[in-house]
Length: 274
Image (cartoon, rainbow, N blue to C red; front, side, top):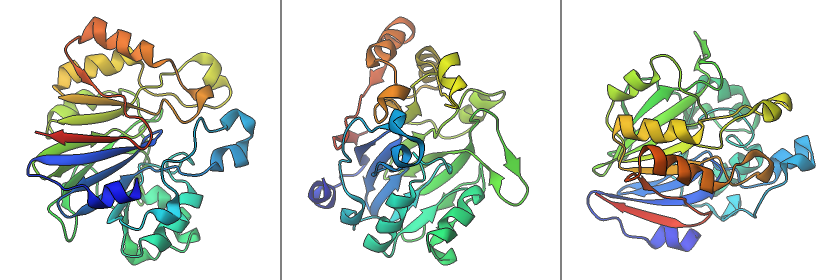
């Protein structure tokens, strides 16, 4: 995977996207590579027990990720901010900058990430990443509530990434909250939307698992917001916190049957050309 990322050429109006598992993805544009929410170790099982066993090994080891320009973190949960991934990647890609919410500041500091390597872009304001033409707009998420602190900002984030003529939306972990659809309608329409589609239910919530979009909600959102391609996320790394992909396919067939739906396997390259 490392060699493929580094050698894949990028045409005008395109992005190369690799699945990293869960909500993890690597995106290559014209001026570099962005990683979002990679969880490349067994850190969750090590801290919380066998319920959280991984379904497969990581498609790339953190110490092999020497090509990263920017590392996005949507929030501080271990399957999104994996300290055993962050630390080695910070060393393997010493010029990489970290883009995240203020809620992650102390955790990154504890991992010896220097302050000048961390960017806290304000929500709903577009920022061009230094050294690139990539524009990023953080959007508030609700996991389950839309939490906000005056100093730290929004606790849960998604990201709209406009790069090389393509718009990519990474939803982070979220539910639909009041104003969510209207907010997204006021922002650039995603060509590709990666959204957490592992659903939620009472029994998972009873063991502390915060859920995400139901498949039917994702299908309605894609139709309402005009997304070209949907990548279902958050539904593969932990078998005990996943639903059958057939449930997702059935929901889209019922609500939005012509929707392009890409199930991205760990380590798989999806090349999007607009």
